[in-house]
Image (cartoon, rainbow, N blue to C red; front, side, top):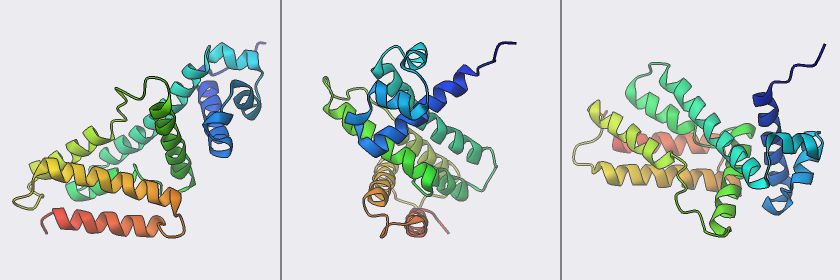
Length: 195
């Protein structure tokens, strides 16, 4: 009886191997040969799923985004009070454990790679800023934003905070650990929300 292969699972497995290669060897080491070796598949099998290196890298990058979005959707489905919902959704964008730290490292590697690639990264939209705008709108609709705050400015500040915490957690993990990230995020949320 022929072996049944879950193609979606196999593609995700290869994408995760791509992440490991990028974390260990950087984007320059993310060759098709290195990725196939890390994934434990032949070059032919890898090319069956991804005909070009760019196709593979795009899939691996998109998988990071999909997983973060799935975690955020799971938080939204919990029916939490608005401020807690927003705070928990933002936490899903931050590197609070090994898995999300790996995703963040790979995400930043992709961003810098695309920025330096031929043609730059015009049109790259990771969805974070629009998502944060929606979260700020949700707080405002629920009457939780402090009076007089400019929603656009607050969305930009929150976006910068999330990106800054993520970057510093990667660069200085001894200083910016999970507890500190949560404290800073909660403090910021207290500063923009009514009691």
